[in-house]
Length: 489
Image 1 (tube, rainbow, N blue to C red):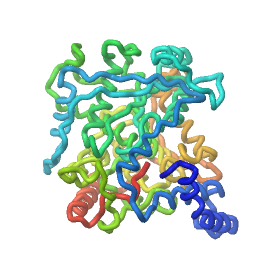
Image 2 (spheres, rainbow, N blue to C red):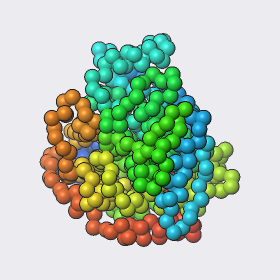
Image 3 (tube, rainbow, N blue to C red):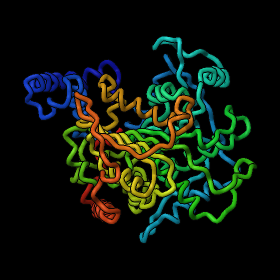
Image 4 (cartoon, rainbow, N blue to C red):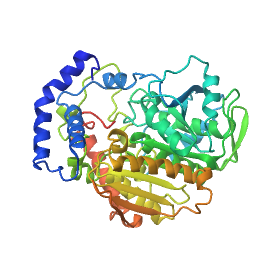
């Protein structure tokens, strides 16, 4: 999308009649969603849908470049940019690869073997006492870090992984919501600039996040931070980033179950195994099914702005550019088609969540809801503390894009509250043991209806696996395209 004045006019002017028609239909209660949405929400969602449901797909490289534009740093946030150096040893990478291999099903998939790399990240905190337009001072990063830590009141450290369908966005695009999480927890966030696909396919991003997590526990020489106890760390993310957080939980569980090693070497230090899990994992509209096989992908489309999965291969392919298609060709932006059903690619496929840290899920009545419902239900049945929230008639990542709604504000606040509670923030120390809970929040009235988390899904793990495998085969046969005309943000 062109953000120049000319480009914006070219994007929005042709849609003025459509928006006027939308407003009239909503005012006369002729819209199917007028009883659920206010006018501003109706206009926002329908405008997003009209932009994203583009009959002329935009090349992947162009989408990626646009999403990586840095909006700058200003206002109520502290940002300290860092680089976490790659270890000279390969133990960490081998631990990941062993886990990937040991979680293969009957089908042995193929995947890219990544190299360890320096991982860029941004320490993010809330900055009080300044206006929204306050420009960032021209200090060195260490000074920004010290100022950030001066406003941190609790030990909560959020390891944040941004959304963007694995190929878009970075910490710069998510500074505002991440700084809000820091504010809500009185803590700090480490927002990771993991490597993006299609240039760096699975498991590159997971390796970068794994390296960032171990770097929090065992800081490399020259790090700004001291060692952080795992009990103070929470994985958090939105959309694809939420899925990466859950994949990290599965990775740690698998390492601890299957590795015969007693320790690994990391920057010259011995890291004992098993590895500690974080205090919790909190996903906002987490994307955890790369096959997109669950019923809500179709059934909830009326409430979402995400374009539906296309069935016509000819119109769903993205135009060729420098980064896509790959050479040799790959069937999915994120991974080989043979890996779509792997639990570290699609955590929906994971059948064992026992021993997991507490999990928080928030979804609208969106296209991705069913995959979250299944994982939350399965984990709760296996003894994991699960907090589930679903919001009637709300779209994907609604708490980050329609912030004026009371439901959006409440959802975001609950996100921060969960992180603070599980990570031992001062105001939650007497809260006691976290127990599973679920709620359905109605649109407009915001009534909270309690639901049994264990009863959220009526499919068995075998039923889900069958759906995933059928969709995977359809992709192989060319019956379904590469995905949406424009992937989820």
